[in-house]
Length: 276
Image (spheres, rainbow, N blue to C red):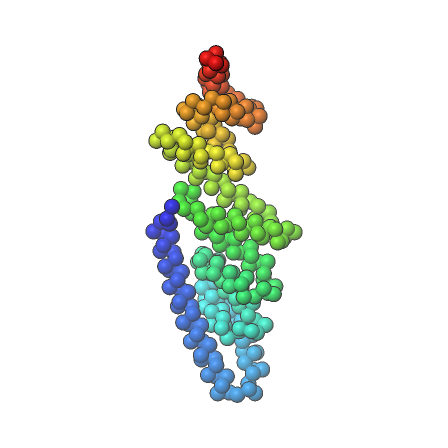
Protein backbone atom coordinates (compact mmCIF):
# COMPACT_ATOMS: atom_id res chain seq x y z
CA UNK A 1 0.00 0.00 0.00
CA UNK A 2 1.54 3.37 -0.97
CA UNK A 3 2.13 6.01 1.63
CA UNK A 4 -0.49 8.71 1.99
CA UNK A 5 0.01 12.33 1.05
CA UNK A 6 1.28 13.07 4.56
CA UNK A 7 4.14 10.60 4.11
CA UNK A 8 5.19 12.12 0.77
CA UNK A 9 5.03 15.64 2.22
CA UNK A 10 7.22 14.60 5.16
CA UNK A 11 9.79 13.09 2.79
CA UNK A 12 9.80 16.23 0.61
CA UNK A 13 10.29 18.52 3.61
CA UNK A 14 13.02 16.20 4.87
CA UNK A 15 14.90 16.39 1.56
CA UNK A 16 14.55 20.17 1.37
CA UNK A 17 15.83 20.58 4.93
CA UNK A 18 18.72 18.24 4.20
CA UNK A 19 19.80 20.22 1.13
CA UNK A 20 19.52 23.47 3.08
CA UNK A 21 21.56 22.00 5.91
CA UNK A 22 24.29 20.93 3.48
CA UNK A 23 24.40 24.37 1.85
CA UNK A 24 24.67 26.15 5.21
CA UNK A 25 27.31 23.75 6.44
CA UNK A 26 29.40 24.15 3.28
CA UNK A 27 29.17 27.93 3.61
CA UNK A 28 30.37 27.66 7.23
CA UNK A 29 33.19 25.37 6.16
CA UNK A 30 34.31 27.73 3.40
CA UNK A 31 34.32 30.67 5.79
CA UNK A 32 36.25 28.77 8.41
CA UNK A 33 38.87 27.58 5.91
CA UNK A 34 39.31 31.12 4.66
CA UNK A 35 39.82 32.40 8.18
CA UNK A 36 42.30 29.67 9.00
CA UNK A 37 44.22 30.32 5.81
CA UNK A 38 44.39 34.03 6.58
CA UNK A 39 45.55 33.51 10.14
CA UNK A 40 48.15 30.83 9.36
CA UNK A 41 49.11 27.67 11.26
CA UNK A 42 50.04 29.58 14.41
CA UNK A 43 46.34 30.16 15.08
CA UNK A 44 45.37 26.45 15.14
CA UNK A 45 45.29 26.24 18.95
CA UNK A 46 43.17 29.33 19.17
CA UNK A 47 40.83 27.87 16.53
CA UNK A 48 40.42 24.66 18.52
CA UNK A 49 39.58 26.64 21.62
CA UNK A 50 37.02 28.62 19.63
CA UNK A 51 35.39 25.41 18.42
CA UNK A 52 35.13 24.16 21.99
CA UNK A 53 33.65 27.45 23.13
CA UNK A 54 31.10 27.33 20.32
CA UNK A 55 30.21 23.76 21.23
CA UNK A 56 29.77 24.69 24.88
CA UNK A 57 27.48 27.54 23.85
CA UNK A 58 25.39 25.20 21.66
CA UNK A 59 25.25 22.57 24.41
CA UNK A 60 24.05 25.19 26.89
CA UNK A 61 21.14 26.00 24.59
CA UNK A 62 20.42 22.26 24.31
CA UNK A 63 20.45 21.85 28.09
CA UNK A 64 17.95 24.71 28.33
CA UNK A 65 15.75 22.76 25.86
CA UNK A 66 15.98 25.54 23.29
CA UNK A 67 16.36 22.87 20.61
CA UNK A 68 15.79 25.08 17.58
CA UNK A 69 18.49 27.55 18.56
CA UNK A 70 20.84 24.76 19.66
CA UNK A 71 20.36 22.90 16.38
CA UNK A 72 21.39 25.98 14.40
CA UNK A 73 24.56 26.29 16.47
CA UNK A 74 25.43 22.59 16.10
CA UNK A 75 24.74 22.85 12.38
CA UNK A 76 27.40 25.56 12.06
CA UNK A 77 29.87 23.20 13.72
CA UNK A 78 29.02 20.07 11.72
CA UNK A 79 31.64 20.24 8.99
CA UNK A 80 34.30 22.31 10.72
CA UNK A 81 34.56 19.73 13.51
CA UNK A 82 35.13 16.80 11.15
CA UNK A 83 38.04 14.59 12.25
CA UNK A 84 38.25 16.42 15.58
CA UNK A 85 37.39 15.20 19.07
CA UNK A 86 34.12 17.14 18.84
CA UNK A 87 32.80 15.43 15.70
CA UNK A 88 30.77 12.77 17.51
CA UNK A 89 29.42 15.21 20.09
CA UNK A 90 28.22 17.67 17.47
CA UNK A 91 26.65 14.97 15.29
CA UNK A 92 24.81 13.36 18.20
CA UNK A 93 23.47 16.53 19.78
CA UNK A 94 22.36 17.94 16.46
CA UNK A 95 20.35 14.75 15.85
CA UNK A 96 18.98 15.03 19.39
CA UNK A 97 17.82 18.58 18.67
CA UNK A 98 15.90 17.37 15.66
CA UNK A 99 14.40 14.54 17.69
CA UNK A 100 13.16 16.71 20.54
CA UNK A 101 11.92 19.25 18.01
CA UNK A 102 9.82 16.39 16.54
CA UNK A 103 11.63 16.49 13.20
CA UNK A 104 12.01 12.74 13.20
CA UNK A 105 13.14 12.20 9.60
CA UNK A 106 16.02 14.64 10.04
CA UNK A 107 16.87 13.09 13.40
CA UNK A 108 16.78 9.61 11.87
CA UNK A 109 19.18 10.69 9.15
CA UNK A 110 21.51 12.13 11.79
CA UNK A 111 21.59 8.96 13.88
CA UNK A 112 22.09 6.80 10.79
CA UNK A 113 25.08 8.90 9.72
CA UNK A 114 26.61 8.44 13.16
CA UNK A 115 26.18 4.67 12.92
CA UNK A 116 27.63 4.61 9.39
CA UNK A 117 30.49 7.04 9.78
CA UNK A 118 31.49 7.00 13.46
CA UNK A 119 31.69 3.34 14.53
CA UNK A 120 33.95 4.15 17.48
CA UNK A 121 31.87 6.96 18.94
CA UNK A 122 30.78 6.64 22.58
CA UNK A 123 27.29 7.60 21.33
CA UNK A 124 26.89 4.37 19.36
CA UNK A 125 24.47 2.77 21.82
CA UNK A 126 22.36 5.90 22.20
CA UNK A 127 22.28 6.47 18.43
CA UNK A 128 21.11 2.88 17.88
CA UNK A 129 18.28 3.32 20.37
CA UNK A 130 17.32 6.76 19.09
CA UNK A 131 17.22 5.49 15.52
CA UNK A 132 14.56 3.00 16.62
CA UNK A 133 12.73 5.73 18.54
CA UNK A 134 12.54 7.90 15.41
CA UNK A 135 10.95 5.04 13.47
CA UNK A 136 8.57 4.46 16.37
CA UNK A 137 7.55 8.12 16.36
CA UNK A 138 7.07 8.02 12.58
CA UNK A 139 4.83 4.96 12.84
CA UNK A 140 1.32 6.06 11.77
CA UNK A 141 -2.12 4.86 12.99
CA UNK A 142 -2.72 1.18 12.30
CA UNK A 143 -4.99 1.75 9.29
CA UNK A 144 -2.17 3.39 7.29
CA UNK A 145 0.98 1.98 5.71
CA UNK A 146 3.04 0.27 8.40
CA UNK A 147 6.52 0.31 6.88
CA UNK A 148 7.92 2.53 9.65
CA UNK A 149 6.26 0.29 12.25
CA UNK A 150 7.97 -2.80 10.87
CA UNK A 151 11.31 -1.00 10.73
CA UNK A 152 10.86 0.15 14.32
CA UNK A 153 10.35 -3.45 15.48
CA UNK A 154 13.51 -4.55 13.66
CA UNK A 155 15.60 -1.70 15.04
CA UNK A 156 14.42 -2.11 18.62
CA UNK A 157 15.21 -5.82 18.37
CA UNK A 158 18.67 -4.98 17.02
CA UNK A 159 19.21 -2.69 20.00
CA UNK A 160 18.15 -5.43 22.44
CA UNK A 161 20.43 -7.95 20.73
CA UNK A 162 23.46 -5.65 20.91
CA UNK A 163 22.79 -4.07 24.30
CA UNK A 164 20.81 -6.61 26.38
CA UNK A 165 21.98 -5.10 29.68
CA UNK A 166 20.93 -1.55 28.82
CA UNK A 167 18.42 0.29 30.99
CA UNK A 168 16.54 1.12 27.77
CA UNK A 169 15.70 -2.52 27.01
CA UNK A 170 12.40 -2.25 28.93
CA UNK A 171 11.38 0.71 26.80
CA UNK A 172 12.41 -1.17 23.65
CA UNK A 173 10.36 -4.21 24.69
CA UNK A 174 7.30 -2.07 25.43
CA UNK A 175 7.59 -0.26 22.11
CA UNK A 176 7.96 -3.54 20.23
CA UNK A 177 4.75 -4.74 21.85
CA UNK A 178 2.98 -1.53 20.84
CA UNK A 179 4.17 -1.92 17.25
CA UNK A 180 3.24 -5.59 17.07
CA UNK A 181 -0.22 -4.81 18.39
CA UNK A 182 -0.59 -2.23 15.66
CA UNK A 183 0.49 -4.68 12.95
CA UNK A 184 -1.85 -7.38 14.27
CA UNK A 185 -4.71 -4.88 14.49
CA UNK A 186 -4.23 -3.94 10.83
CA UNK A 187 -4.29 -7.59 9.75
CA UNK A 188 -7.43 -8.34 11.75
CA UNK A 189 -9.15 -5.28 10.27
CA UNK A 190 -8.16 -6.42 6.77
CA UNK A 191 -9.44 -9.91 7.50
CA UNK A 192 -12.76 -8.58 8.76
CA UNK A 193 -13.14 -6.45 5.63
CA UNK A 194 -12.54 -9.45 3.39
CA UNK A 195 -14.99 -11.46 5.46
CA UNK A 196 -17.69 -8.83 4.93
CA UNK A 197 -16.95 -8.99 1.20
CA UNK A 198 -17.33 -12.79 1.40
CA UNK A 199 -13.74 -13.21 0.28
CA UNK A 200 -13.30 -15.92 2.88
CA UNK A 201 -10.03 -17.33 1.57
CA UNK A 202 -8.35 -13.90 1.77
CA UNK A 203 -9.84 -13.38 5.23
CA UNK A 204 -8.41 -16.71 6.35
CA UNK A 205 -4.94 -15.70 5.16
CA UNK A 206 -4.95 -12.51 7.23
CA UNK A 207 -6.38 -14.23 10.32
CA UNK A 208 -3.76 -16.95 9.96
CA UNK A 209 -0.93 -14.42 9.79
CA UNK A 210 -1.98 -13.01 13.16
CA UNK A 211 -2.40 -16.46 14.68
CA UNK A 212 1.02 -17.61 13.52
CA UNK A 213 3.03 -14.43 14.00
CA UNK A 214 1.29 -12.33 16.66
CA UNK A 215 0.26 -14.76 19.36
CA UNK A 216 1.59 -12.34 22.00
CA UNK A 217 -0.69 -9.47 20.93
CA UNK A 218 -4.12 -8.30 22.01
CA UNK A 219 -5.57 -9.41 18.66
CA UNK A 220 -4.70 -13.10 18.76
CA UNK A 221 -8.06 -14.13 20.22
CA UNK A 222 -10.00 -12.08 17.66
CA UNK A 223 -7.97 -13.65 14.86
CA UNK A 224 -8.63 -17.17 16.12
CA UNK A 225 -12.35 -16.51 16.43
CA UNK A 226 -12.30 -14.96 12.98
CA UNK A 227 -10.62 -17.98 11.43
CA UNK A 228 -13.17 -20.29 13.04
CA UNK A 229 -16.03 -18.39 11.44
CA UNK A 230 -14.31 -18.35 8.03
CA UNK A 231 -13.84 -22.12 8.25
CA UNK A 232 -17.54 -22.46 9.02
CA UNK A 233 -18.48 -20.24 6.07
CA UNK A 234 -16.27 -22.35 3.81
CA UNK A 235 -17.67 -25.62 5.26
CA UNK A 236 -14.20 -26.66 6.35
CA UNK A 237 -15.48 -28.53 9.36
CA UNK A 238 -12.31 -30.41 10.32
CA UNK A 239 -10.27 -27.20 10.27
CA UNK A 240 -12.98 -25.44 12.27
CA UNK A 241 -12.90 -28.20 14.90
CA UNK A 242 -9.12 -27.95 15.15
CA UNK A 243 -9.35 -24.20 15.79
CA UNK A 244 -12.21 -24.65 18.27
CA UNK A 245 -10.09 -27.10 20.27
CA UNK A 246 -7.18 -24.66 20.06
CA UNK A 247 -9.40 -21.83 21.29
CA UNK A 248 -10.61 -23.91 24.26
CA UNK A 249 -6.99 -24.66 25.14
CA UNK A 250 -5.93 -21.00 24.99
CA UNK A 251 -9.07 -19.46 26.48
CA UNK A 252 -10.72 -22.04 28.76
CA UNK A 253 -12.75 -19.37 30.54
CA UNK A 254 -14.29 -18.02 27.34
CA UNK A 255 -15.75 -21.13 25.73
CA UNK A 256 -19.19 -19.51 25.54
CA UNK A 257 -17.88 -17.46 22.59
CA UNK A 258 -17.54 -20.60 20.47
CA UNK A 259 -20.48 -22.65 21.71
CA UNK A 260 -22.60 -21.97 18.64
CA UNK A 261 -19.76 -22.78 16.27
CA UNK A 262 -18.93 -25.94 18.22
CA UNK A 263 -22.45 -27.31 17.85
CA UNK A 264 -22.66 -26.46 14.14
CA UNK A 265 -19.29 -28.06 13.44
CA UNK A 266 -20.07 -31.19 15.47
CA UNK A 267 -23.39 -31.64 13.63
CA UNK A 268 -21.81 -31.34 10.19
CA UNK A 269 -18.95 -33.67 11.08
CA UNK A 270 -21.46 -36.32 12.21
CA UNK A 271 -23.44 -35.93 9.00
CA UNK A 272 -20.28 -36.25 6.93
CA UNK A 273 -19.33 -39.38 8.84
CA UNK A 274 -22.74 -40.95 8.20
CA UNK A 275 -22.44 -40.35 4.48
CA UNK A 276 -19.23 -42.40 4.24
